[in-house]
Length: 314
Image (cartoon, rainbow, N blue to C red; front, side, top):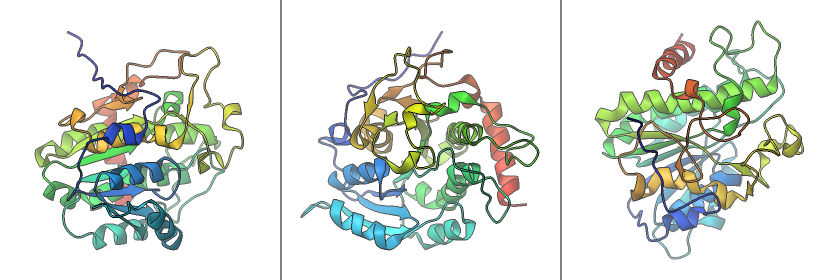
């Protein structure tokens, strides 16, 4: 019998504030990577407004602290601060995790780059796979014990509908032997974000750590499209014939992130992929919605975990 997909009262036009209305996060601690702009900023704003202590993982802590001062709730229990985190630099990821003290209740893996020109880290890793996937995996692994201490932590992996454009290229994830394609690299990294959630959910269930992935939707006014200009002209933009034709602002784009990070409506849910504040249906060709079967494949998820660990710890 087919399992019923999870739904909530919220949808594509709901904002992060809508989702957390009435939710009290006092005493809870959160990390939001890329939390100084775009949907990361709106995610952090909503969590802090609900009472959480929020740390923005950013490459520029000074700029991040200016943003933190702007979004910290006046007179409320929530606080916001920034800490240096460069996901393409494993030393930076390691330092961030080692500096963390105490339990961590919410880890929102939000930062990312899209369709970037070919660049490599010091290890030779392709930059989108390194930043969007490997950096976040290393961070989650480094913070695992803090998450486990929370006894009910949630990890949120921000993916994209762009994952439907391609699976993992298992024999050449870093484009060492094939011509570089920025969109293929992006799609691969976004598929990896979902597979990470599937395998981490399985591995960390005994620690009461829920891990889910999501598609935030088409978001206007963020820096994600800085490498491509007008995102509506990109291969990853929506098909005009598709039912997925609406754009969101950043507050709406953050709604599914905060749902998975903090809403009681999805308590205990793990290893799933959401969009528009509901569990996504299987992807259908020609419709830029849903989740590709390969992105939820448990064998693929386990394989990617092992491949990634081999890269992180050669």
